[in-house]
Image (cartoon, rainbow, N blue to C red; front, side, top):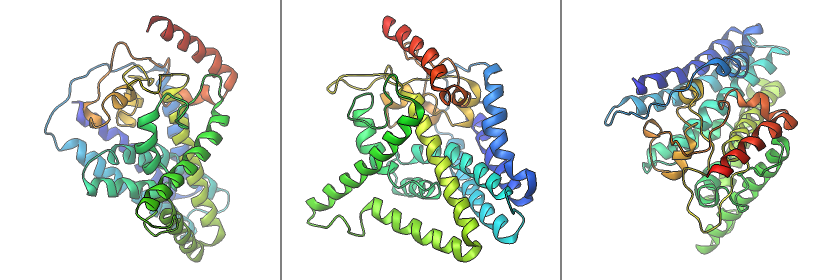
Length: 336
């Protein structure tokens, strides 16, 4: 039954689309559902430690394709709701927040799975999903830096002990953006091309985003542009929040292989199946090519005392986060 549980991950997207089309207070639906209800009830939900998985099933790929469709509908419904007036006034903020939460917890999570695939079609869909979330660096930086240097000072996406979520967000976002630009610049220079060549992934994304925002302005004016940009901001904040809780305080030597002890994992059932097993992140860094539905839990991996969904309440309050997680980190390092 493991594969069928991943269909629950589509629920936030369906709520987002419905809220954007209904307008009014319904525009806040997914923001309240995902960051309110799910984050709260996860504290009371059990773990699912089962490692069994089915080989050869079409269900995991179907779930990914449905996320592609639902994310497209979420962005489309945001544009439609604002341009038709179904979403107006301050309810535009609600629709932008709901859509941004979905982009951060669905589009970027699914794109993370797809950019690791060898198929050029899957990778293209992954890049498209990142584009809808306004991210122009993750494809380059995640594959070429994060997986190579995770849990070392060379990786801007690995949070250091005593670093707040807010400080990490600034350092990680800016570090990954400039790092991705530098990597693309070096790649093109090896081919005798300028950094401003059209094949520069970061530059191309920035240009396409500018064109997309121009189209939004022509369709719905400045309110639509602001709504799209707000959903970009929230989506990428949630991405960096996830990076923050996945690797906080864990370290390794530069020449040491990344294994199951260099990422925090959790088997909380809501985080597992709403985030298509992103929460089994320890196994992902141990075997990066393993598909999400085959990831397993390790008894010797560092375990978060909360799920990925519910951890946001703690991470937003640095003193509380440090109080809980530094003790958890000391406990793990004392027994590892």
